[in-house]
Length: 345
Ligand code: 9MR
Image (cartoon, rainbow, N blue to C red; front, side, top):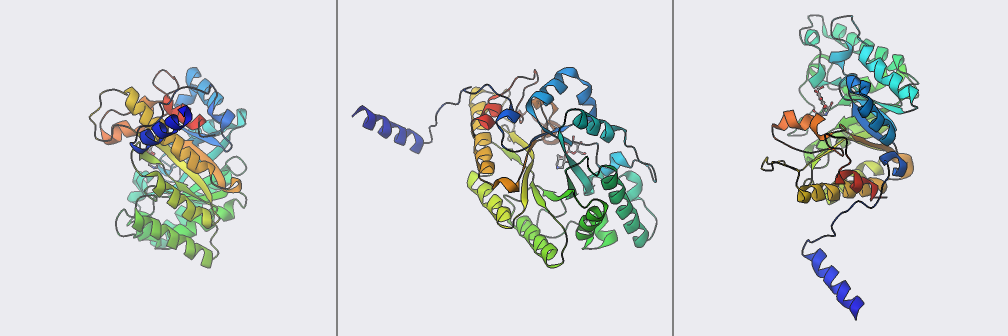
C-alpha cells in the first residue's frame, strides 16, 4: 500500500513538473566518468595560472584554443605567422598527454584586417587561403586530432551560404575546397564542420545536410559535425537536440558537442545564481549529456566546454548581462552543472 502511495505521489509530482532535487552524490572529476573526450576551450595565458591549470589537468583530457588558432591571431599581418600562443597550448597538451581539437581554420568573424583589404585577384586570394590552411594543418599534423575546418558558413535565415569574404572571392564551393586542402595537408586529421543553431534553425540545418549530400556526391572528405551548444536551461528542447543528433548520427558522422555553455539568465532578470537556477542548469546539463551518451561510441568525438569559470565566459560581454553558464564558479568550485554531467553516466 505504501509503495502504491509513493508511486502515485511520484507520478503526480513528475506530471506537474516537480522533479527530484539535485544534490551532490558523486565526488569525481569529469574525465574520470566521461566515456568520451571531455574538452575545454582555453586561452594560452590562462594556462600559466597554477590554480587554473591544476583544475584543467584534473578535470579534462582534451583542449581547444578559444582564440589562438584563429586566422586573425595566427596571421596578424600579410606573410607573417604568429605561432607563439597556439604553440604554447599545443606544448601544454603534449606535456600532459591531452588531445587537441583545432578551432578553426576559416571563420568569417576571425578575418585579419589586412585580408579584408586584400587587393589581389580572386585567384591570388584563393591561393593565399589554400596556403594558409595547408601551412597551419601541416604544422600541427600529428599534434592536432581534429580541426573545425570551416565555422558558421551559413546565414541564419533562408538556408543560404553566408555572404562572406570567402564566398565572394572563392565562390560557393569554397567550403568544399577548404576540406580538400586540409585533407591534402594531413591525411589523418579528422575534419569537422562546426556551426550553431543546427538544433533549432530548420533552414540552416537543411542547408548543412544538403552540403553533406554534395560532399558525398563529389567525394569531399568530412569526418564530423560540431554542434555548438550555446544553449539555455530552457532552450532548445531536449527532444529537438535528440532529433538533430539522430540526423547527423544516421549519416555516419562523428558528433562533437563543440561549444557547451548553458545560460540561466537569458532575459537578464536574475542578479545571482540562485539554487533554483543552479538546479535548472543541472537538469539541462544532465539531459544533454544523456543524449550524447546515446551516440554510438565510434561516432563520439567528445563534449567541449566553452570556458572553465562563469566569470570567464564570452556570454557575459556578448549578451551584456549577468550569467553563470559554465561548470565552475569564480573560485574554481564545482557547480551543480558539473554534478549534472557526472550523474548522466
Ligand atoms: O569565446 C570566444 C571569444 O573569447 C572570442 O573573443 C571570439 C572571437 O575570437 O570567439 C569566441 O568563440 C566563438 C567561437 O570561436 C565560434 N562560435 C561562437 C563563439 C562565441 O562567440
